[in-house]
Amino acid sequence: MSALRPPDQVMRLARLGAAHQTRLSFMRVLLRGLRRGGWQVARPLWEVDASGVGRAVYRVAGQGQVYSLVCFAHDLPDDARSDRVIAEAWDATFALVDGDVSEPELQRLAANVPLQEAGRVSDRELVLSRANRSVRLWDHVVDALAEGRQPDPARVEEVGYLMRTTAVYGSGKFGAADHAALRGRALLDGPFRAEMLAVWLIRAFVMDLVEHMAAAQGGARAVRLDPSLRRRFGIGNSTGLGMAPFLVNHPLLLNAWITARETALARVRVQAHASPEARAAFLRAMARGRALLDSWQSAHPVQQAKLADLQRDAKLLADHLSGGVLDEPAPWDALYRWAEDALSVEGQEWLAALMIEPHGALVDDLADTMSADEHAAFRIDGGQTVGALRAAIAARFGWALTHDYTAAEGCARFWYISEAKQEPRLGERAGEPGAELEQPLDIGRAVAALARALDGCPDDLSLAEFLRAHPGHRRAVRRVHMAGSAPYAEIRDNLIGADVLPIDMLRCKLAFFGATRFDPRSDRWVRITMYQDAPFPTELHALPEDDWAWPALATEAAE
Image 1: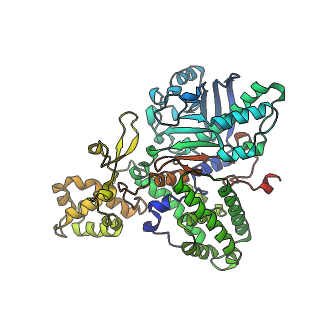
Image 2: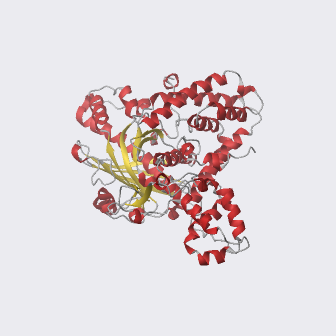
Image 3: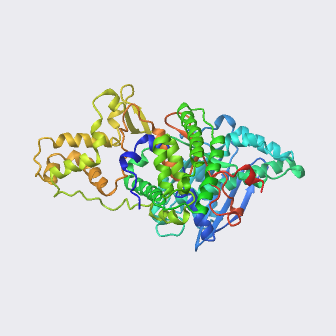
């Protein structure tokens, strides 16, 4: 197999912040699992009035399991609608429950789920979420359908969703079940699969709700959305700093995700020839990818520059392919090596996703390798010598030793947890109070301090003796040891420097979710679209498998 790309190349923020969804992204893995497992979705409860207020339940069953999404639709005044985490009311709130729900349980959930963090949920709940309408598009769609016509496709393309979630909480948050409760279960035993199931079902509820409200408003003249246009609605999401520290606090999980993707790319690059089927699928994915670029808009200058790079790179790639590179021996490796010189980092990562796309039989098994046992103890080898530790730091953390953490720009930021919402925040060290509450996300600085502490220690001194005298360096030692078996565990940049862009961390994680149309609103929060073009529950077993992640071309949609 072709060698995996080295961590020094892959784990830089600029490249992590150029990630794109692939076949291994969690939304796509989930829908493949639902389809292959024969899962069925029903809507046993729909109690929503003409104004769009009420409750509903979506029941998904398969492989001996049942899960229920309980939905509450609310009457939210326009002036109370906010995407900020400090909001206290939303247009809709949700809970994904393990098993069926009885009427007493629905009453319990109705008293708590609309309150979100302020409520209480049990260990039967797997996910807690909430969403707000995109008001102008919502009203346009309701009015159009009520009048018997389809909404304007251009307005649909501009936004891409009718509601956006402002949080999708799982893994033990606020009393919900820990991820360990799903271990060993078909479909949901994998990273963020319960959350992705909840979002997919939320999308179904949102579209049912908008059509319900149009029918109530228009009566007999109202129409439903055209199926192909209906699928163009995804679920939006507003994500801020709360997500960014996850990649630092879960190094083994990050390593598993990156290793799976890099292994998939390596498996493709080593192929001796491009089969006619793979070639056709690649060219089709590229054409669809360019269509996605055409609909991808952002007002943020950083993202605008990336989109300009992608548009340029897409043309360069198309021109290069016309020269017959896919007819040559080892075509995928040759194509990627050309891209490293010819394309931007954004274009290189887009090409990597496109290259993986036609090779499902070759790479889909890697989805089962993307979990990590983070509860297993990671023991420090106290018998290691200081000399061996120095060598390990030089080999694995040389990047950390290149920064001056005493300079103002080298430690300009600090991460902390807000008292009000218990959510991560990023402070400016020179101008804001609270640096004494700094969270330990400064891995580079910690390892650099460890390296300085080792100066003057004899090479044959045992690590146990060193740590007995310097116990404050245990965290850094553990990260150095961990990197020996998990080469992609660390982001190889200064996460407290003046030039750090948290949106790069957000995009990396969201791309593994399967998100598209990244639209940063600052360097600290981003809007995305999820499940755009995906089949709805009624279409899951009728539409081609895994054919939705890149938008269909106009000629395909017409077929």
